[in-house]
Image 1: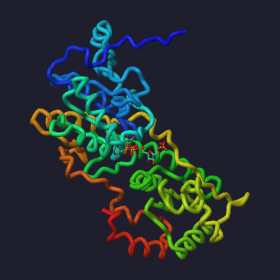
Image 2: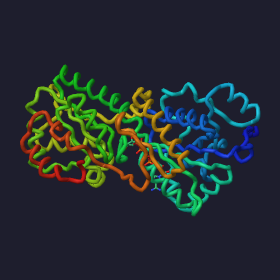
Image 3: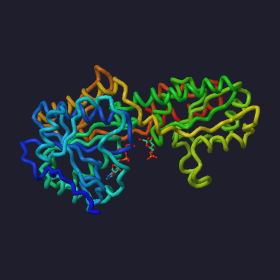
Image 4: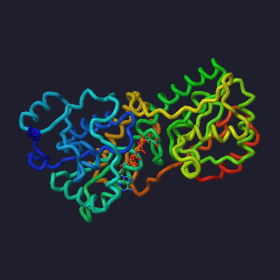
Length: 392
Ligand SMILES: Nc1ncnc2c1ncn2[C@@H]1O[C@H](COP(=O)(O)OP(=O)(O)OP(=O)(O)O)[C@@H](O)[C@H]1O
Ligand SMILES: O=P(O)(O)OC[C@H]1O[C@](O)(CO)[C@@H](O)[C@@H]1O
């Protein structure tokens, strides 16, 4: 049997206007990718852009694309879609997808983009397909990929922008789309375990997402009233571990939130394959906190399902605000910018060169890390983190 061939035209074969925008969605899934896609489609179309999406992120622009259909037009209405389909132009009507979970235009992360020659080829593809403008959407890795890619365009870089979407919220000076929804979904899980620990008189060590930043785990833990929150950059000395183990042994019940990145290096070295919460459990066992039939101590893994929930409306409205500011910046002739939304009165656009990665948490949260009031832990946090780069 012969494979069916792709009947659709590539962008290069489609007559185009002056402004052809390519949107590249990459990075780990987070609630709100779809909201951003819709917002960019609506706002871009209104301002005279032909809006396209790469179907598999950065990969679509390279020879590693696995999908025959590498680019799709994004349009607002179904009628427009049918008109384009009748001309063999691949198109999706985005109008009603504002609150969809997941993303239509993604695949597994693509490590091949770290290779300069591959990015050079991707720049050639971008030009050959007639794209004039670029918007990359994702977390800080996507931002790094976007900046690295621009170097392949030499002196003729296209007008470019980045929209920050992630659970981790680790790009400085912005609140990532998806962060608030992620905290809602994550705190729901944490609070459920809190109530279960109360009912069964158990100790739960719940791992939550946060490889390096810890903001997700921190906000979920505080909201769910966790008794202790362990951040990714913590490495407790023995006396603090002993105090925590003794404190938890005496507690009637407890919820401990452990960020996914806790002791990552040490785990890789000493206990490869063991998760952060399981590792913390092993550490506490050494100081007497044991899982017993009538007194359970349970390590729970983190839940990827929070990345696939529907975005909340606060994230949807931020997606529209970001898209509007982004096109406003393009229209003003600005390039290499990221729209930011921190609060209603704190919004704007930042230049790429001012943007940094933030594997940190905010200082004001420090008193909320432990509800037992453990003196050694508190002293250790004060001595090691109040002047630390990991605290803002
Ligand atoms: N330094 C880099 N150079 C080139 N490409 C990169 C670089 N860093 C990341 N990328 C590309 O960006 C993609 C997304 O990065 P990554 O998987 O780190 O996710 P992210 O955008 O940070 O999202 P999140 O952290 O929320 O999962 C990678 O799969 C890779 O293709
Ligand atoms: O599902 P994967 O590929 O293991 O990715 C997990 C990573 O993605 C993130 O959820 C960000 O999307 C991080 O918090 C986590 O480290």
